[in-house]
Length: 110
Image (cartoon, rainbow, N blue to C red; front, side, top):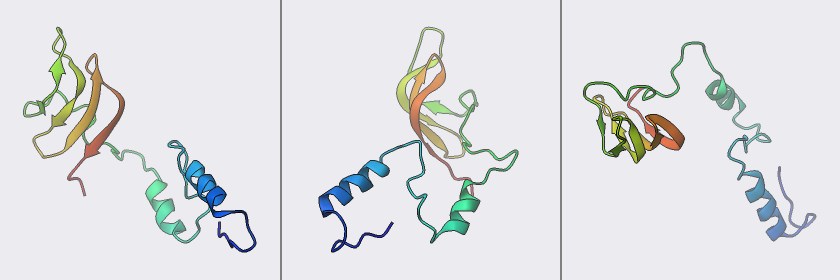
């Protein structure tokens, strides 16, 4: 969407509309852009068998380290960082041993 300020609404409204449209975390804010379509399409395409989170379900690996707390049943709880032997890590929350809510995954996978 290109705005010509001489013919359009005021800049404050344009900025507010843009912020509103780019603040929806579960939607693609760049739907209107056609400049990068080949790259966007290939990045969004899924293939069977591709692991999108290389740290998922690796909490029990022998050399993994959790810097957060454990509950009475030795489950990961609360906020912390799970670091794996290969340098990958997940930082976020756990509840009853399972990931809970948002988190950050950093991986060396190429």
